[in-house]
Image 1: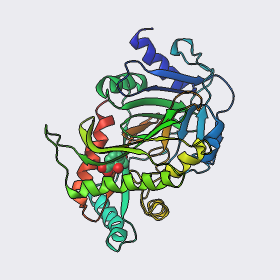
Image 2: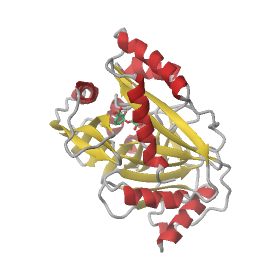
Image 3: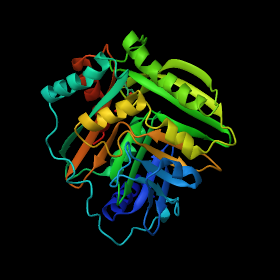
Amino acid sequence: MTLKNSYQKLDSLIENDACFAIYRLPNESSPKFVMQNNGEIKHFYDIEELEENRGFVIAPYKIKKETPVLIIRPDCTNLNDAVIPDRQNPGVGSERFKLDNINRNDYNRLFDLFYMPLKDGTLKKVVLSRSKSFARNRNFSPGASFYKAMEKYKNSYVFLFHTPISGTWLGSTPEILLSGRGNSWHTVALAGTQYQVKEKISWDDKNLREQHLVTSYLLNQLSSFNIKPEINGPYTTKAANLAHLKTDLDFTLPENVGLGKLIKSLHPTPAVSGLPKEEAFGYIDMYEGYDRRYYTGFIGMMNKSSDTNLYVNLRCMEIGKSLLTLFAGSGLVTSSNSRDEWKETEQKLKTMASIC
Ligand SMILES: C=C(O[C@H]1C=CC=C(C(=O)O)[C@@H]1O)C(=O)O
């Protein structure tokens, strides 16, 4: 199959409302494909139910009736063999977002609102995010953009998926939520951002603190399962035009700990939500002003008996029939200011904007 045929086929699968995902693991050369051939896609409302499942997982930031956890059964794993279903994509995502993107002034107001609980000590960290929609160009091809992203972002996890429930999403994320096989597992604390990436990068206290909070959260969640990971970091890692701070946590999964329970306890990490966990989650839900849906959720193949690779859904966009919507957020701590955080989200939006 030529590259052109591959992306045309991916576009047809979307147009005909198939349940599929194509993804490329960091530093691998070829993508992997999974598609459910028939039947309704399995969906549920409790992350713990992932436990016994095998397939491509699509989990939202917040589970709701409209955004359940989805799992694509891997009936077909070769794009060449995929049969295009005989139905039409009604375009679930297309009219969801209007072109009323927030501007700098709206953002400043939101920043002030999100800064209040940091200032009075109710929250230690909170992630403020936004979406940005624009009209879809007539020539835009999701399939072609997937291959462009694969070429451009070699060390990220690049993905494109469509299901009738989630709509179509494309992204290139640097953040692992959980990966591993057997009893050997891995997670990362990824936070702190620089966008004028120089040869020699040094990190200020604001970024170090922001990232340290994620590491200590993960250690805390893991220790509730009696897991004591091997820690490596923090060190600088690059993702597209950005640099982040990263700490690797490697561990053995005790026999009595279910994967579903573990994932439920990790998600959402303070890299996308905040601390304390419940309070920050509630604050975002109340005041952020839009529904993140599958942005800052997690995605990827889950298979207890072979490899599991779950990534946080970042640097992504939702592809509607007439609109494309990009998403980006940044972690606020007491030393944050509105101007820098706005600029940081503008830079993060570029990861996807530059391959549209
Ligand atoms: C929430 C996002 O990034 C997270 C991951 C890395 C660095 C982040 C930061 O510096 O704020 C965020 O925690 C996003 O890209 O939308």
